[in-house]
Amino acid sequence: MSDTMRAAQYNTTSNKIEINEIPIPEPGENDILIKNVCASLCHSDLMLFWGHTAEKPPMEKVTIGHENAGTVAAVGKNVTGFKVGDPVGCLGCSYACYECEGCSVHNLHCVEGTGKLHGFTTHGHFAEYSLSDYRNAMVLPVGMDLTTAAPLFCAGTTAYHSVKKCGLQEGEWIAIIGCGGLGHLAIQYAKALKLRVIGIDISDSQLESAKSLGADLTFNSATNLGYQKEIFTKTGGAHAAVVLSASNIAYRDAPSVLRINGILMVIGIPKENLSVNALDILLGKYRIMGASSGTPQQMREPIEFSHEHDIQAHLTTFNDIGDIQKIIDLMEDGKTAGRFGIAF
Image (cartoon, rainbow, N blue to C red; front, side, top):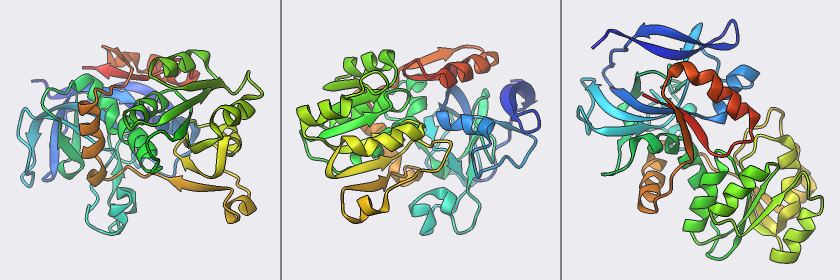
């Protein structure tokens, strides 16, 4: 095989993506080398362009992407549990210790300070080959499609835990605010968990997708100015609202669809910091939660659940890595449901 490959890389100087020919990486002692079948783009990857991330690339050019699936091409000397040819996927943060108190919450909190985010502080997966710490990866269930599995290693795990960690009972109401890349998966998980779903978005096409996935009620919050009243009339208020949108307005309005002491689940990352009414929290009008899913301990459950319940991302793929800018433009437009990726 060739010693080089094409990679989609973020240039920290120009604040743009470029396609570069780079060496195929050699696995370190704890690495698996993955021959990628698919890499998909996550909305958080776009934070590079906004300058809205504390995790700054330490190199001039970093290969983007932290969602992927492929097969093992080579292993480092310390690797156990993987062999060449295994179908695999990995989470977004490698090279932590995976054992400390911080790593039990998110590997970026590792006390050793060694955790690195793929696509941000270490190279990601928008290339034919990429590396992952083997402790941050898993072998896929038998028969799982490698292409549609790729988005599950960020979008899927995030959406699953955002719903599951609300702790709702069968038949209770959950509002999915933002029905696109994350939301269309969250709706599927919520229905598989036998919850009743309210889909809220500003895109009619994404709301149509939400209906097709089983959302019990849908509302366009931009055009239906009385949607909160309708929600209370029909449901008594949501027991939880999962905000998967990166909009500050979505967060501002989310508490208005909650019944008393409902849960506001914080997932989407807006450009500006959130503002909350402290008295509302003190008096229990609603509760605020987050659902970190960035640890290997939390990876297997959503992947196996997805396979068992045939939950798949709506994935549009392109076959040339040179199409990465088209994918970025589609995601920034925000009008098309699902995920976008490169199939290698």
